[in-house]
Length: 88
Image (cartoon, rainbow, N blue to C red):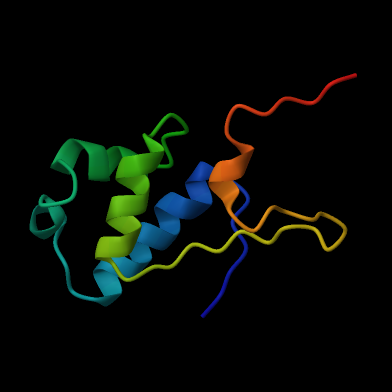
């Protein structure tokens, strides 16, 4: 199932719903994050660390896709963009 996410609250609700549907307790996910972090994430905390969020999502089997606009051309190797700036 794919769904569009508009806010941290949306992510939190999806994490909680997925966790509950899989019968996983918050304590069972502590290999990826603390209970406190999971509680905050499920509550939609907007300052949750992206690395930890991605680890929790992966732990639940949730995949993240970014839909890049069709008119944007990205380099073959995204690491080539590091350090580049837009000149005006």
